Image 1 (tube, rainbow, N blue to C red):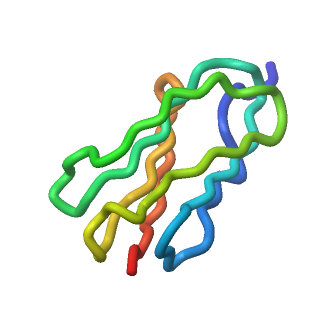
Image 2: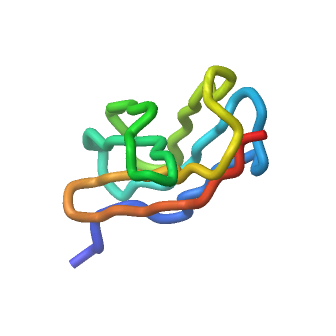
Length: 88
């Protein structure tokens, strides 16, 4: 059976000051959730996107956020990927 889910989850640029880009590969087309979370665990931005099979792209506008450490989180059903992001 082919493993379903996400791989090659990446965020750039890091550190970021204006627009944070997210890329990931998806084994099947389905809705996924992208969140930007601060160090206290508070969700500061959220995107629900319908992914396609293969490479996917999305972005967050971070210009209104306070400088500091955040986490970009991708949720695909039970699978959760997270990467640390520095906003400056």
